[in-house]
Image 1 (cartoon, rainbow over the protein chains, first blue to last red):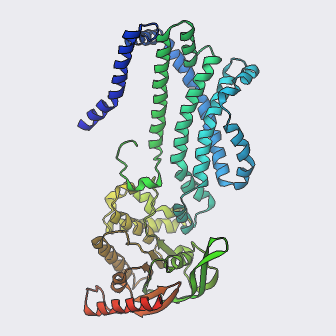
Image 2 (cartoon, rainbow over the protein chains, first blue to last red):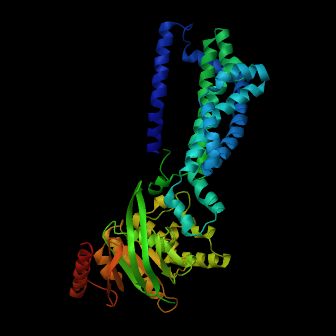
Image 3 (cartoon, rainbow over the protein chains, first blue to last red):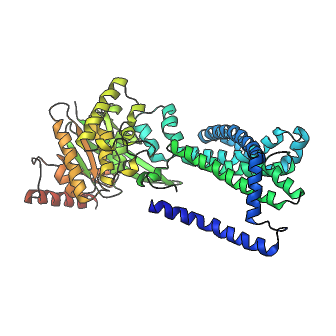
Length: 261
Length: 249
């Protein structure tokens, strides 16, 4: 209990300092340039009560969830295939490398032209943003397995199917999950960007709407909501990774009951 | 069961470009069924490579091994436990169940694994994860995984090199007990690789001296077990040492 309290206090240190600095600057610069924490809290409260905030958070989360799930399945599948097949890797790698260099938002003008301001253009942005971290992490992990552990498979006469299911895929899971966490973060960021240009709902739209109405309190409320929603999504990923017993071979020598690292 | 006879075994590894390192050179070795063989040699003399070839993990360049039991009757224990960190101890020690064994063999081996875990005092750790075990416990669990499938040929690659002195003695006794217990029913042949001379004098019935990729001498030791430190054992250890020095010249 003492340890938990200590952790809580340590984790609260920086938010409290930020809050104090925010309060100080808001007081000295005037609410036009920086609304005070109390104003933003009031805005958050009224937007929560009116259901506006839930609406925007819900829409953004749904867009991220749909895009993220579709892309993750495709990226993990392709990562495994390319990790196992040098031929496929030779065919795909240069082409994928070209696409990896392109920031998803740069495609927005074209996507709006093709798909309008509807959901498809935002989905495409999320897909582009999520794909590469997940794909690269999966490819990397599957193509460079721990040879010592693989030898257990040859020792016990595993078929190639069993080697894949019992050794190569579980071995790759920790890196795949790291890729998924990074991918999820990227999809949030790019979606907010897309919503700022091409949407009439969602957290990105909320921020732009606040800017146009010169309501910095709304902008800040939107930013705080993004931070909280993103952290919740990441915590969920972390929870899932624990359920799947995702561990690195090097974790074998450290105590599993230890905290999150 | 006939003697396992290794004749003219060669194995080299390419280092860079055209340069290759010859790990095993024209090696000859006879392993008597039911014997406890310890292969002693310095680091890099090729003893692990030899064990890996016998276990089927590496292919020799030339030479032959006659009368080797079928592959699922050979069991190899590595220097480190090589546990899968995402599996419990029980799932690890029965990991062979995904391999080349029949359902009946798996059922029998699982019963054996239960008994061995009990013998080694690991039953309460069954649902723990490898990271929660001490080094000695992990090696014991690794021994359970290696022995549960009732092998005819047990290959041990410096299995106790990483544990402390007392744990090592304890684990040596456990291997010795298991080997002796099987002498009358289905004899177990052991090939134990080490660089530790006292381990050889304490355990082996046959001590094979390995130097520069070949077996240079074989010494027999028929002294009864247990073998405390006596003048005879010291004499044997000096013999092993001089044979090792002779082989490395």
